[in-house]
Length: 235
Image 1: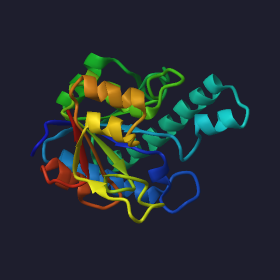
Image 2: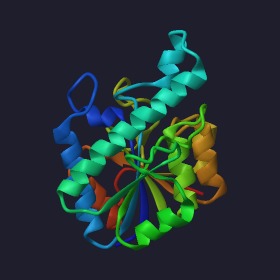
Image 3: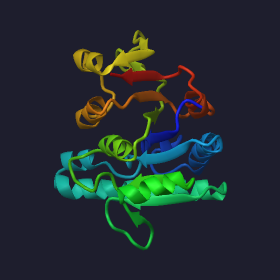
C-alpha cells in the first residue's frame, strides 16, 4: 500500500445521499465498508466529517444569527455525523475512537494529540469531531490540522466530484480536470480546493491533498493502493 497513515475528509452533505437533509444510513454504511476494506490492509485511518447536512454556520449567519453561535452549532452537527459513522464502523467489528475538540465526556474523548496517535498505532480508526473547537474555522482546516498533528502521509478529500476542474463541472460542461497540480498553481488559477487556511496549512507542511469521488465504491481503496485517480495537489 502507498500510505501508512491517512486522514480522510468527508463532507457532511455527502452523508445525505439522495435526501434533502439529514443522514442516509445506506450512504454511511457504504462509506464504512469502503473504509473497512482499506483499514484491513493495515493502513491507519483518521476521519474528519463536516456538518453541512444538518447545519451550516455560514448560512445561519446570513440569516441573521450570530456567527460564533452559528459556528458552535455547526460543530455539534459534525459530532452527530461522526457518531453515525462510528456506529456504522463498529457494526463492521472495527474498533473506533471519537475524539472532539469540545468536551463531551458522556459520548467521546477530548482530543489529545498523543492519545490520538496511540489509538492509531493500536489499530483503531480515530474520528475527529467538533472541528478545531473554535469559531471561524472550517472542518477543512480541522482536517489539515489534525493530519499534521498525527503525522498523516496525505489528506484524502472525498467529495461527489472526481477531482479538481478548471470550473464547476456540474455547471460548466467545458470544464477540464487536473490529474495533478501544485499548490502554487491552485493559488494562481483561483481554484477552490479547500478554504485558504486549510490549504495553506497543507502547503506549509508539505502535506499532499488528493481530491476524489468517494461516492464511487472502491475509489478509496484504489487511491490507497497508489492508483492515479482524482486530483493530486502537491508542493
